[in-house]
Amino acid sequence: MPESPVPEPEPLYCPKCAREVTDPLTCGDCSAVICRVCGTPLESPDELGIG
Image 1 (spheres, one colour):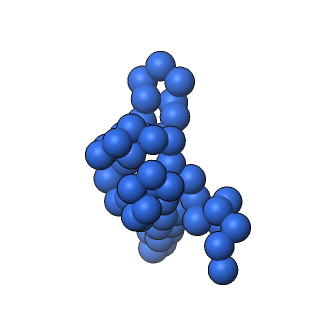
Image 2 (spheres, rainbow, N blue to C red; image 1 turned 135 degrees about the horizontal axis):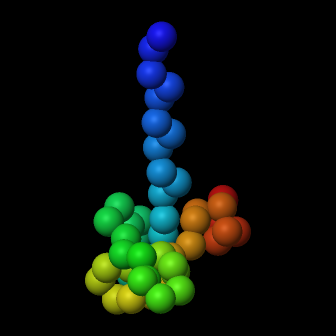
């Protein structure tokens, strides 16, 4: 029986750095996913209303 493919994680975007984040941090207290560079909470591209 073949293994099920692991779905790719959804790309995340930092609105402050204006870039896609491939190595986010997760807050240990509130589980927020934040930018490793500036600490801003990340958003998925479909939440940004672009395109």
